[in-house]
Length: 121
Image (cartoon, rainbow, N blue to C red):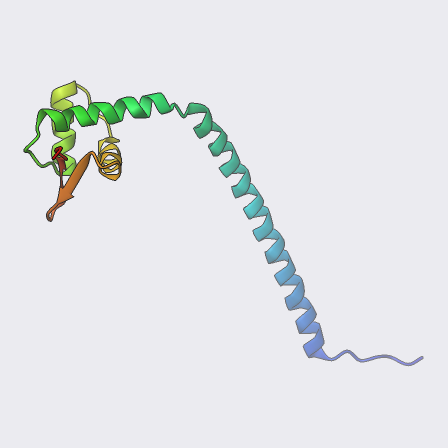
């Protein structure tokens, strides 16, 4: 009976391939898990999304600008003015301020950036 000899480099390549396959399978499982978590979080976020509350916050922020037409606000100053006027703190004032700027209701200038009420011509 004749015995075949196997080249050692082929053996190493087969073993390396097996390791790579296991690594790919592990990465695929991790991707599937992360996609599952993302889907769950997306569902919770969509269930809690209330556009009327976002609009209410934007209106409250606009009221602060209307009450101070010549005053420019940094994000920190605006948060303080918002709290003084409405009596509660919120972490979304900077985002609402950027939305007002995007809608053309406010303008910004300077360094650090200050937001101002956009007045009609």
